Length: 165
Image 1 (cartoon, helix red, strand yellow):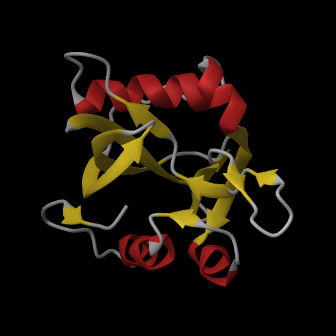
Image 2 (tube, one colour):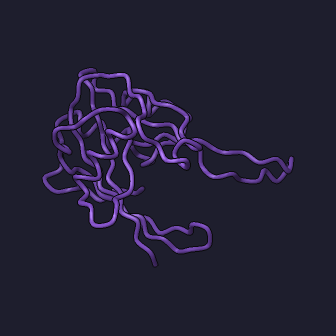
Image 3 (cartoon, one colour):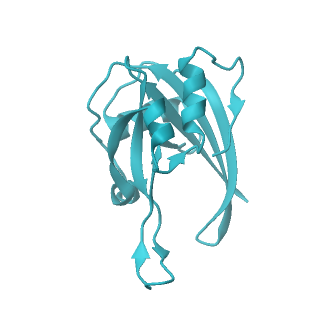
C-alpha cells in the first residue's frame, strides 16, 4: 500500500473564522439519470509532501501556493488523521497532519495550482464554527465544527488529536 502524506492548515482569523477551500470530487454516475456529477466538499488548505519534504515545510509551501499567504511558521500541530482508500485501483493510505494558527483576515488568491488542483478548485470562504455546524455542505473532517469549537474555546490538545478524515 502506498502512503500519501499531507499537511493542512487551520487558518483562524480575528473573528474566529477558518479559511476553507471548496473542491470538487471525482466524477460519479447518477444511477437514475445516467448523468455524471462532481460532488463538492470544503477542506482546509494544504496538500501533499514532496519527496523528502518535512510536514512543516510542505505546509508553508502549500499555503503560499494555494492562498498566496506566506506563513512565518507552520503553527501548532493539533490533529492527525489516516484513511485507507483506493485511487485509480491502487490502495493508498493517506496520512494528514493539521496545523492551526491565528492569522489576519486576507483575500486568498491561488498562486501555483497544479492542473489537477485547478480542475477541482471551486473557491475559498471564511467559515465560523456555527456556520459550519448549520450548513448542509460536506466538510472534511466531518466533525470540523466541533473540533474547531474546542480550539476556539481554548481547548488545544497537549498532543495531536487523532481525528477521522
